[in-house]
Length: 364
Image 1 (tube, rainbow, N blue to C red):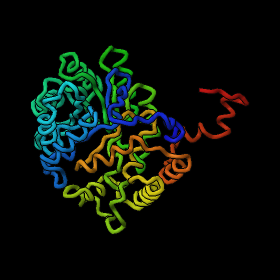
Image 2 (cartoon, rainbow, N blue to C red; image 1 turned 90 degrees about the vertical axis):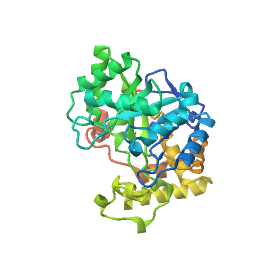
Image 3 (cartoon, one colour; image 1 turned 180 degrees about the vertical axis):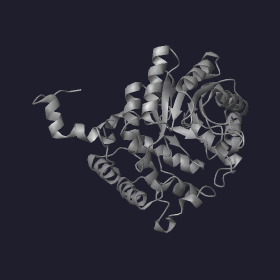
Image 4 (cartoon, rainbow, N blue to C red; image 1 turned 135 degrees about the horizontal axis):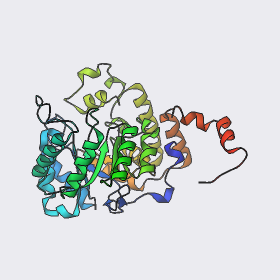
């Protein structure tokens, strides 16, 4: 079902970072916007230096934010190290989420992937860098297509039982594998998955086919990454920035990242133009419009903000009190809609609906 059909009512918006939400089917309280730390460090050519990263962290926590997102490989480990240093004085008040899967040594076949050896080694390294003895949330970062699901689930459950991880989540994985894993975890009494991190924004809505409704049904809170589509939805790029050589754009600038991620395209710029026009009508910024749109989906718990400066963060936080009218939502939907495909489109046809329900109407 499309996002605008399942959207939050206008009074369902959180208006501040300290209007907390439950994460999936857990009792864990998290802010409605998470702070991402992929920008902490300059190793990738476009991040924040330490003073600026500290200021971003202080701004977020000072506004009541408690949900921090990182990963074992972000900026070569610098993101976790700085986050651990910044968070140390208020560690117990924060929800620290990190990820494993990413390889830690390029020539070592067991230093990355989803298997138990990679999982345990990555968690131990993250604990040291984050200066903590437990992780609030550990994600499987990317599906490796090789590791048995029972090995992953039992490894996560062992870490929870040992007190090194409190909750488990998953990211960048096919919906059928996640549904299978959640079912196995439930049947065996292992720790369930409570969070699903996916790319979800006005440029990338294909998650609405399977991933978002699956998460909503099975109790995983959706945590969208890149709600601004690598910055394309802020209006910072123009046609002159387009290139067809995505293979050459793997590092060096945010533009290169946007191209490599498939966000900086003709379609992306066309959607960004609609976002900019609506922002102008509302007296807001395009970034606020883009983030606020993701918050309307009831399956979404907290989009991840990747602000590089305190000013960018403050601007993004303005999404929390932004309200759309029906015409704005229609325009955003029409500009960005994707086909849901079979069987969803088939089941939505009048002939199929009539065959199922006849002339009756059933409310849900």
